[in-house]
Length: 396
Image (tube, rainbow, N blue to C red):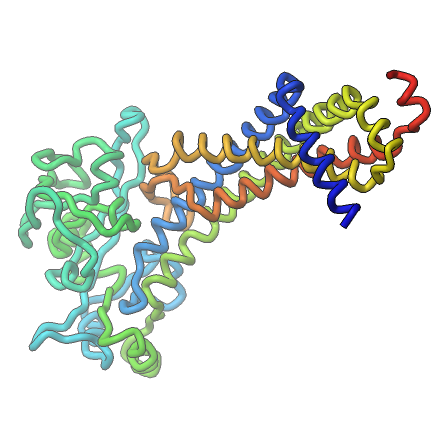
């Protein structure tokens, strides 16, 4: 109990003297805060991108593509096969209507609002009338639904914000056709909000892909019906397809980009963290040097070296924690919700998304800041514990 009381007393004394060393302490705080801002902001890109992809799918829907295809863009399914797929058990039906949509997925060039001189690859999806009903999260928030067998389109909210000529009433040219934007839709922040949707038959005629599709989206009776639906298609020799749950497909589409961004984020934060550690070391060495006589006096009065070490480490951790809180708060204010778009290298199309500074990301940033503080205070704490009492007291 005596040891604990000594430790607490020295810690409180140490913390009370921080304002007298505010200049040197601010160097460590600012350095750690800068590292956390960069660390959290870069990883918020990864969180936003993966969130947009993961939110796009539902375990209650299945995506059917050609065997061997890993993306819709590389898949091809002919009309007769689509009709067979729609006959499979496990699909939800509303009377005589099968809740399945044969879809065509193409990439068109549109300039970004932020850089009109640089065209970007924007996904355009042709859907059947059942395509909207299979996606219960999709809703028209401005304008109206397009009319089938026309050149009308609806545009995802994120695409409308990022690319030119995608507001209600605008027109744009793609292929040999001029398209009219009649509505804007939302899809709970999923990747579908980066897409442009139109009538699949009209899109087929524009790109001369008559009765050819890339995929079939199916709404299942329930998530548990996936096995029945998949097994029936796998055993049917009339079709050569691969079946995946929609949410699993989109999750796999985000893995490569998420891994790249995470690697970049940890790499940059690691390099900056080295500099922040040196800043913390210098700050704590300065603190120990300014308190040499105080530390020697405490030890001469019987305070043990462990209490001294823990007091220095506590100060360093407090400085790291303050820097971490400031950095995390700065990253949240500056970047959370910031809208942007980037290339999905698996589909070579743009994906619009918002940065996400999540609670987990904030916690990770704080842990990183405390780690920097702990490492930065370790050597100065050991030096404080090893100060020769006799030589230190001569400074009195």
